[in-house]
Length: 328
Ligand SMILES: Nc1ncnc2c1ncn2[C@@H]1O[C@H](COP(=O)(O)OP(=O)(O)OP(=O)(O)O)[C@@H](O)[C@H]1O
Ligand SMILES: [Mg+2]
Image (cartoon, rainbow, N blue to C red):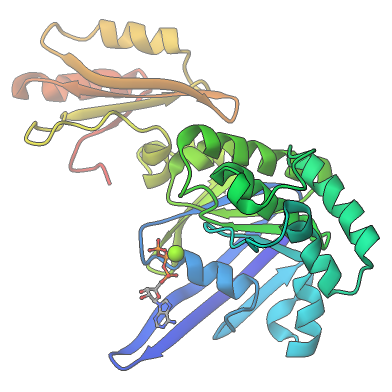
């Protein structure tokens, strides 16, 4: 389990103090995958650096498996860090070493004899779907395969927690999918608690059990996927159920309707929309299945006279309706 309590990080610069993390409290249950999303500069990388204590937090607690790492002196910290595996955007493998030697490296450094380290490395390569590729050098592996070697290396010291900082942002869609499948597999087979920092909502949709939105050093929304997608109109619900982008110059739709199978079947919603007056146009819409729920969003255009009536009709039926000025 990962627990952050009132975590703060202040950077002092010539231009003054920057509150990179401004009181982060977060609990990631053991053996689950949590995503952290947020715009550039939100504090995502600072958060991951504070989690590994590569950066000392200004205040607050970082508990991994109950132990507060922020309170430990440097020497004890070094052994505790082994319980945390790290995967970065750029894998940084040793070019002159084979995949198996790269994975074995952290074990060799901590004194494991070569034969045992290599045997363990072979097992880990098999776990990440690279059996038989142990003898390849990084240059002989694709980007996705290199990333999987990086995951195997992160697992070598048998961590209980895996931290991933933008693990897929240098990869294409299909390769990202493979890497995420490996992350999910190690989460399930080894019971690892995983924290993924990403700017891609697609990553959250594919593997995360829960998600937090970070903005200016604070968590502005957080929860299990099923909970955030049914917080209709909330920033994460809108990002997790995206509508196609409106062409530049084209006005946005006037009304937005959201629903989930908690309250409505898709069929019921389509009937309610079909019953609206003739001059109500359905401009865009999406329906999908996330966290075992069917969730949907529609954008409607109504002429000014009819608008109030349409909003009333939909709300009386129990649908969530946002008007642009209400939409965040
Ligand atoms: N070493 C540092 N010294 C001073 N300010 C810093 C330092 N590191 C980060 N910051 C500031 O802290 C804030 C958060 O930065 P951080 O790198 O954590 O953002 P991020 O969410 O990872 O962004 P990105 O998505 O662009 O990687 C920014 O305002 C940044 O300028
Ligand atoms: Mg960053």
